[in-house]
Image (cartoon, rainbow, N blue to C red):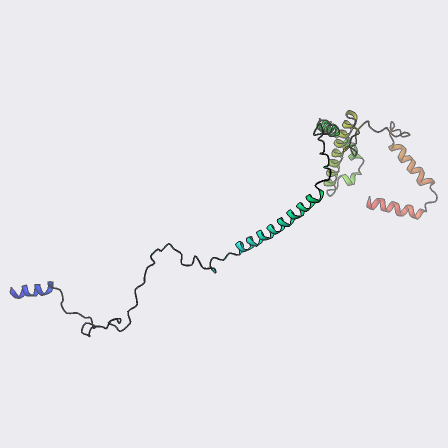
Length: 248
């Protein structure tokens, strides 16, 4: 029992011997650690850690922008002083000269010609924005009948004919709007409207009568010219027919 207690007490008690090899060595000298290395001095903390120790350093606080700004201000001050000296000299030289009269302001800020011009342009826009009768479909069919049949049925020329009809319709509408402006408005003779086309429509050319169909007479005249135009060599007529048959 006693042996059991002794074993228990020995197990619970801490170990008094140590494994440190330096324990049996002689005490260390001042300034030298037990392992033989010198003792470093303690790091001193700054009294005020917020103070930047490099705040007064010219190298770290140098800014090229500040230097250029100060140089620019010196140049500006120099130029300003020179201009001020020239103005003072001019004032001393011409202080006794008579003063020119102040320009008189007009009674109205906008001249009468400009009012007329703006009024005309406004009325012209109103007339041009009015409804215009569209080109009739029968007119387009009549134009299409004048094109040879082999050209109308060609797939390559179908898009070209559509573009042609679109251009004809656009020109027709523009002509109608221009005619409306010419019949309704009269262009005033003011500055800024020199290139405007307005006023009464142009007179019809004299000597042309389109009251009768002209196609049949045109065909007859072409036949007469082919029969009676003797200066034209027969070989030229043959080449002309070949070109019309292949390229037309």
